[in-house]
Image 1 (tube, rainbow, N blue to C red):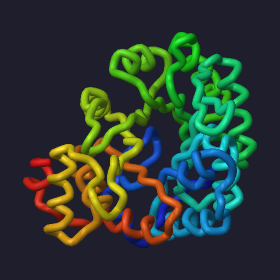
Image 2 (image 1 turned 135 degrees about the vertical axis):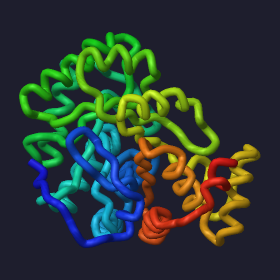
Image 3 (image 1 turned 45 degrees about the horizontal axis):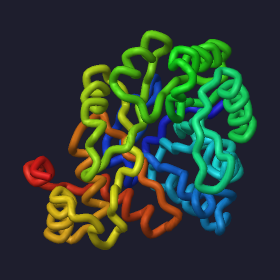
Length: 294
């Protein structure tokens, strides 16, 4: 089981403040490990040693929430994390997901059958080298399986002590209301960024219910150097970044952190330089009025 404790030494990621994810308190700038898989999120990292350096550096910078999934690789991403960080540092929360399968590169298929989720969870436990997963998230609802059946199996796994908390991903509000009748949901992971705010109502639901909202694709179309879209909000974000002499990615993260205290961004990268730039966004002091205007 992941060891627990507290680190009293301030680190760069700590400037983002904290958020509750179930019984855990983590700093509000995590790390998404998906980009440490191979090209197309298929296979192991092309530079495995470099990927391990990125993971270790994230923890050194104070990141204490790392998100992965059995579908990344598939399977290789979880193994990479365990090979790099196990035994896990005190206070580090590892979140993984199940419910998507990968028949081949570029293919993502949903499988929310209870028997699949049980097998997936057991396999993740083995790869992550733990007897209890900190946060296990249903990667996406399966239209051919009632949400109640999928989450019911996660509730059984939780009761068996194989996972501590349950989260969901790619859910709408109606699905969340149905799901919370089956099991306590402590996090929601949906696509959300400056350009794509289609999950605004889900974010508001999370705020009302004190549930962590974990935006995936948090940087949108930003590539650390220039805007790549014509969206007016992106152009305003780019102007803000230019005024303050920061990267577009840093501005995007600052916007997310200011948008809501329920948001836990998990930017991912395979670059040490980009990792350090992202974490530096935790300490940016930008005009709240500027951020609200985006």
